[in-house]
Image (tube, rainbow, N blue to C red; front, side, top):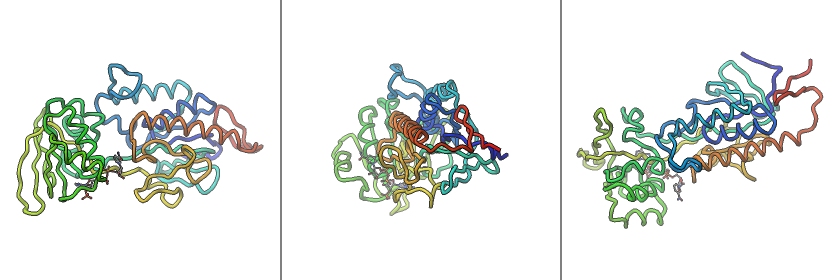
Length: 327
Ligand code: NAP
C-alpha cells in the first residue's frame, strides 16, 4: 500500500536499544516518528536472558522485558510502529523513500539503527540453544556460568576478551580456534595466552553442540589437520567469530568501512545529509545496549536539528510530525 501524500519527518529503521531510544527522543521533541521494526523486533537483546549492566535496573532485567519497556516508552510519546523488514531504500532523492515490499514510505530525515548480527557457526541446533547454553555475548551472559565450564569459539579480539572475561566466573575456559595462530591484536592475545585459566585447542572447529533437554552438555571438536574428533563436556558455548552489520540495503548509497559498518562523523551523521546512523550498525567496538541507546539519542537530536534547519516548504502541511503534500 502506498501513501504518496504522507511524508514523515523522521523514520527510524530498527527496534533495538538504538532505534527505540531514537524514537523516544524524536517522539518527545516534535515528531511522531515512524519506526519500522525490522527482522528481529527488539533486536539482539531479545535473544539474551538477564541484562545486569543496563543502568537503572539494580536487580537486573530480562532482555525482552527491557526492550518491551523501551517500546512502551516510545509508544507513550506517539511513535508509530510498522512491523516488517525494509526491502529497498532510495536516499538519492528527497524525501527519502523506504519500501517494505510494495509499501512505500517517505521521510525528510532517517535514523538507521538496523544493528549487526553475530556470525554463527552454521550448526543445526545453535540458534535453538540460545539462552540454554549458547551465547554470543559474554558481557551479557558470563555471570550465569559461575563455577561452570565453557568453550569460546574464535581467535579474534572479541574471543580473547570474552575468554578473559569469562575466567572471572567459569571454572574452566577452553578456546577453540580454527588456526594455530590468533587473529587478535598482540595485547589481547598475550592477555589470554598468559592467563592460566584459559586452555587453547588449536586447528580445530566445533562439529556439533551436544545438548539434552536442559541445555548444552558438551561439544564435539574436529581437528582440522588430522580430522580426529573428540568430545569435551561443557555447560556453555560462547560463539565469538565476529559480527555482520545489517547494511546490505545501503550499499552504494552510504559510506561504509571495509567490514560494512556505516561511517559516521560529528556524532551520528552519515555522508547523506539528513540520514543518521546509531547503534551497532555503526559501531563494532563497544556494541553494548547502553552505548547503542546513547547513539540513538544523539541521532534523534541531530535529526531534530536537521529538521529545524530545513527551509520552509509551502507544498507541505505538517501536523504532529507527519506532513501532507498540499493538492
Ligand atoms: P574478527 O576479528 O573478525 O575475528 C573473528 C575470529 O573468528 C577469527 O579468529 C576467525 O578465524 C574466527 N572465525 C570466523 N569465522 C569462523 C567460523 N565460521 N568458524 C570458526 N572460526 C571463525 O572479529 P572480532 O574478534 O569480533 O573483532 C571484530 C573487530 O572488533 C576487530 O576489528 C577487533 O579488533 C575489534 N575489537 C576490538 C576490541 C578491543 O580493542 N578491545 C575488542 C573486540 C573487538 P581466522 O582468524 O582464522 O579468520
